[in-house]
Image 1 (cartoon, helix red, strand yellow):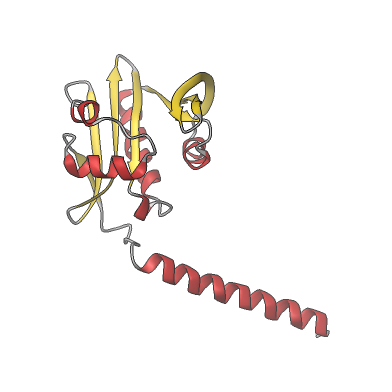
Image 2 (spheres, one colour):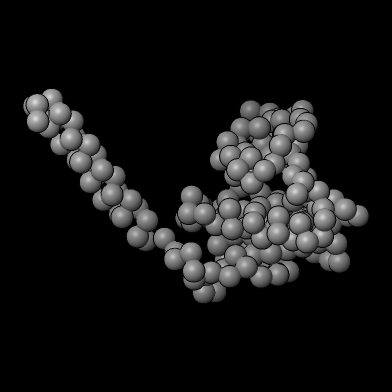
Length: 178
């Protein structure tokens, strides 16, 4: 083969090898086997609140977090062994399910756990024949990708909804329907 082609192949193989080694190094410490987890109901407590504080730049106050339970609430957490990896808090009113909070421990983000929590929520909504609503920071590209990837559409905007370091930030209102 021509020298130029040999160089391209060599560079491509080097890039793939570097990427593979990087992935091995960066995922080996906190990578969980996707088979070694379970999702269960919970009542908001300190373990989940520690994930809340690590995952959000403006976490809910303890008083709000700890009182987010009851007949209309659905609180689900994703565990590996006894470690809380993430959770959702939603509320069912009539035929609308509102996702109030979703969090994944930053040490485990990017490994599909947010997707698993969303699937759990959407499976429930489908069984209950519900429409799902949520609000998300307009700047939270990762969350917006997760929601859009699960079939959510943006249906509105709440101006200056969230506190931000430099004032306030808009929220996108998103909707899912089976």
